[in-house]
Image (tube, rainbow, N blue to C red; front, top):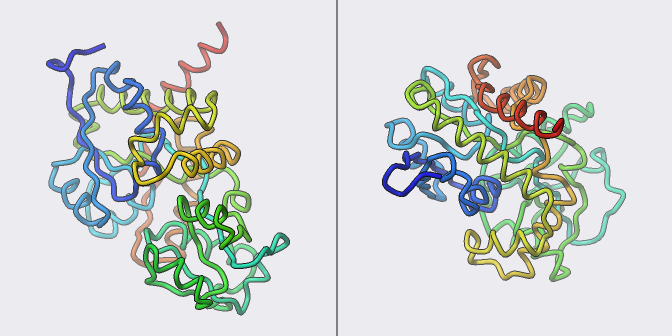
Length: 316
């Protein structure tokens, strides 16, 4: 384990709450990055653009995001591409929430309905539209309500301005606990395993500091393995400081669902088929994202090393 004086700094940015990238922050809290000789510094800004601009300027080495960011940067003309180096979340943790229970809702039932899309970031909206398209349902047969952000989504649902709202945590669990909303459709169930969130690194960082990139991959995957063995109470205690706005009961409910839905269960590496599916979905549903070939958009070297180490441990 390194001391504070000899740790190598890695600067990481994100624009979604820390709980959305729980394994990364758990790795830091448990000292896994420090054991890799790393001092991780994080920058949070709810406005997506500032972290991206700092990343492009070289002030950040990595972003907590997903493959969509790689396609977005390609669209902006950024070269060489910034690839994913390790998977954080293995499911798309979003849910269509209704005002009344609709346990038998099917994708076909969304035709003619008003869907309040997620205002925090584009990926879940694009994936839902692509899921509808794959079911041979014209996305234009739904009324997509866009540009509604944060608490305004819940207010719009409360006022009946939409039939469903595409939400994530903590809003989903909060509405369920208060009896103000019900999960009508789970993207987790409809999409299954999907490497939704990743650590995206700059090519400069990979070329100049490969050992630091390896340490990030090792720390994240080690945290996921640790989390899979813990109770929601234990994880809530550890994650509490990264989500100070949430009371512990609500946090436990969120983590309990995450464990049940297996957000964080899977290998470190990004499989080609996951990447190709996401590439097709994002580029089909949005012209603001330019496809990047798997060889340029994914750097699995360190994640593969982690997987080999895990297999060797299991064989002992």
